[in-house]
Amino acid sequence: MVEVKVSETRDLTRIERIGAHSHIRGLGLDSALEPRAISEGMVGQTTARKAAGVIVQMVKDGKIAGRAVLLAGQPGTGKTAIAMGMAKSIGLETPFAMLAGSELFSLEMSKTEALMQAFRKAIGVRIKEETEVIEGEVVEIQIDRPAVAGSASKTGKLTLKTTEMETVYDLGAKMIEALGKDKVQSGDVIAIDKASGKITKLGRSFSRSRDYDAMGPQTKFVQCPDGELQKRKEVVHCVTLHEIDVINSRTQGFLALFTGDTGEIRAEVREQIDTKVAEWREEGKAEIVPGVLFIDEVHMLDIECFSFLNRALENDMAPILVVATNRGITTIRGTTYKSPHGIPIDFLDRLLIISTQPYTEEDIRKILDIRCQEEDVDVAEDAKVLLTKIGVETSLRYAINLITSAALACQKRKGKVVEMEDVSRVYGLFWDVKRSTQYLMEYQSQYMFSDQPDEDDEDNLMV
Image: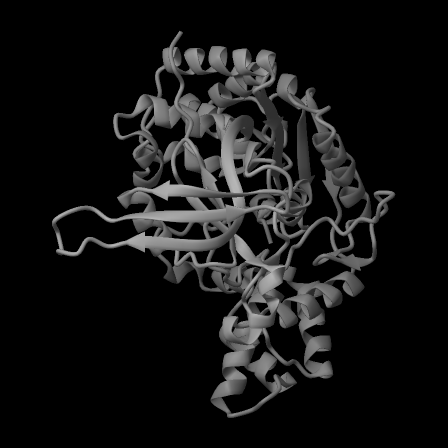
């Protein structure tokens, strides 16, 4: 049987920045899955949020693999926000992969390969591994340096203790170097992996808490370990199937994940990995964690992609698929047929459809409040009323875009709080879709390649 390599993944610190949905922290539901009015950055859309909460609960219980959900609604009704809220509610260990429908056509690989990679990014494997560790409190470190420099390697002794026993270990040059690198000293509680020799500092012993002033506020104090020094510990690695695919299909191993050169992965490699993962599941060494794959702008996919998704959802290890669209009855890409949301009827039949409704004036006001707080902009009450009015008459996205530009206009006049005059100024500078369309209709003859629309076409303009 082929040996499958798995790389241990570590969380890197992400750069926090303000984005369109950076204020979303979850779905804003209580323990009974009832939506709160304003919670975790979510406002309104109570029915859609509750439906999404039921889906999240099913994902957590592992009961919905291979199902698909459609978020359908007008532009600017919070479809992507609900998908982001689902991702945050599911938890850190559940994989969440995000993809825009148009991305598939710009990648240097076939559409079906890109979809398969996205599917496998959304399927996690929790691998359990038992390791032997020596865990105890450092009593003393003795390092014997040779009399003549360079004539012999350093040697030394390490005394470790638990609440029940104390042992002296002989140290070699590599272990002495590792202890020095981690600045291990007496009073530290450490764990040493027997297989790799890796040293982990767990903290300072409570018996040394009187030295707190010399340590600093960031010092973590822990209890002296009890029982034997040598223990068996279960370590859990969480990786996705896609990561295992890349590691096993590239000569540079897990480094291929950082170069981004994943390329197309052969079907034989995936089959071998699936067989090995199935073996691990039977032996109790691993378990599958079906995650969520979110495809935005799903109407951009063509008929071949939909055929692939139809088949892929029937796989044993399929994740939950969440797709979003803002289209009505439109042509399915790659065909001359029209269908609701631009999705073929056979695929539409598999979907649980969650509908999003337009926001009320009160909802728009609350969302603008949250965005002002997120973007750290002080806005006067009358300016917020004006922004809300603009949001109702034009679109919520346009009103949100005016917050930062109004803050810059306020800064220019050396003001502290955004007033109505700042909002009015940027409203005059930046046009919304309706005003822009109206201007085009009036001055169309002065633009290149302009076709004067018929009366029927005027009704169909998306304004």
